[in-house]
Image (tube, rainbow, N blue to C red):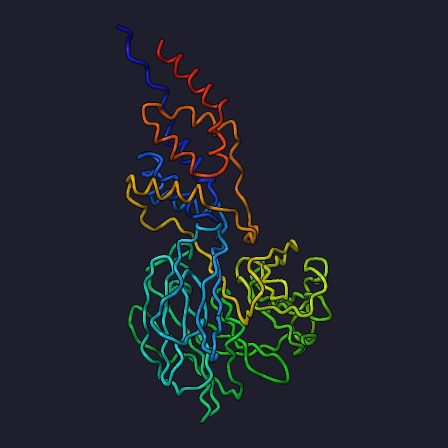
Length: 453
């Protein structure tokens, strides 16, 4: 009787971990599919140390964006639009149980909604976990106000905000007391469950809801509603004080909108459109070699080189405050534009985009699905029926690609006594599926026949 075939050499777990680290974060389903290949891979993907290393080598991916969709009767309904490949988005549409509500802010994996009504009703929603937190009514008079949501560890710096789902959060609300012409800053803490009046300043301008607020270090910037000159309101969370900043003098109310964001050096950025050009300004209060208004023109480029012509109207409708790109609404769709390298990609179809709130987060911390035949079948269906998304998300920094020869050597070491393992491995990504070619199978048979001698 011939001796039983000798098993192939096992793949070192450390090597598998290095391979899985290179899977793209812009397609969360890839990690889920990899988790059902075998028990070893699932154990590696469920390890918290893998999550930390994965986030360290990848930029925070853009998973989608939110905006207010207006239906008949001017009823606002928040809508989440995924920028992931089709059938790869794990997020459902927000179901808040209210008929008319709008998006106020989105940051650190959380979304802040404002429910329209006679009272002030704010809701914080976590798309990753599905958890929603209804806030008590703030102690202000119903008037024009705006708010920002952020991780509670922002001031202390104890969190990198890459995976703080379920952790305490803060909501900073700005409202004008029209009876005394005083701007008030109220802060809500999810730990205490109460509002606290943090700062106030004599001011006669209302706070604008759009564009969205911008967080830079310990400062939150809001836009003030003024018909004369665009003014920003800065709230210093560390000092608990309010101050105002005038926008660049060249910015005029021409209908092109504007947005604020964080520059690479940590300074405040201001972007707007004028004369068919996109202008980006930088402001650093420490720098004395700037203009009298404190702004320095950092870059300008023509929009005609990136957006199809003719385009009757282009407006800035949002920004990713830490990622260096903005959103532009055009007659040809919604575009994401990188301010550093000048790239531009269409991320959604044409529509009414009054304000866009990007949702950027990793999707590795959730519980992986159970290892079962049902999960395998569902993943195979996704692999067979999925199609490429023509509206690709912005290109951020990419890790080094894994060489095809190394991938094939890895798959050749998958034992043949479990055919489902190779089937599951073929669903991880397109390249791995392409390895299921006749040449690969012939070579695998040859390799395993050698080990049976």
